[in-house]
Image (cartoon, rainbow, N blue to C red; front, top):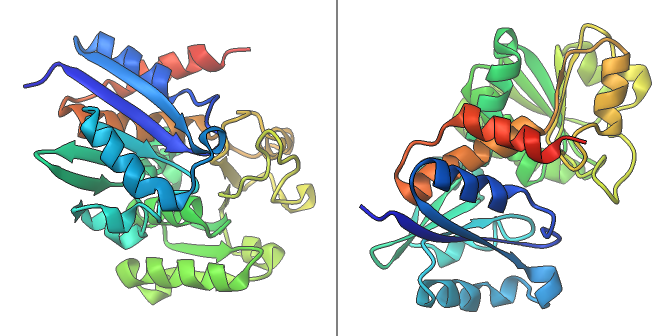
Length: 283
């Protein structure tokens, strides 16, 4: 079994990603030699049309795998030889493993979100929830919530057609009675116990909150997928209103845990990676 791995992250605006540090540190702690590189398509002037050449290049240079993030999670699909069932259901891949001349597409976003949520709010896994944002993150969050037993997930997006497409994708696996596209956040929250921000709102460069403060009841749990910064406006406001909060760091850690295991074939220590993430993000 190999003990040396060359990995990379492909996406735009990823120069500040903590994934390289987490993967390389977990490699050292596991007795492996892991080298992890950033491939920032924005800085390199690369687009989706360059993906075929980029994957060829990575294989020729001996990469063992790539994490894939925005805006390439869907564009990479036709370039792969195999998709896991969850990646096919989601229509998105965030982990590509190069193995025996084949490209294997996997998705650890949904499982990472689910693991982070269960660790933070184990008593809320069966709750009714509203997911704000129906892009790749929204589909992954919905999948994670439904897979762990959420009674119902309502999906809202600034583009109603995208919300409907997301709901249809989730309903194919989990049933029409458990997923609904919605257009009125206030009304949807009236029948929910929790809300998730799965939009970029709250990230550095995308200030604001996707959920108005007036809608944040103290009995509502609030989750955010954004982790740059960890304390988004939504997270800060929700805490101040007395809501239970799940910041985005947990998803970031647990998707990396899953990717590490796909890449190396070794079990990662989730607690150790969580502690390292906390060190990296400490003010």
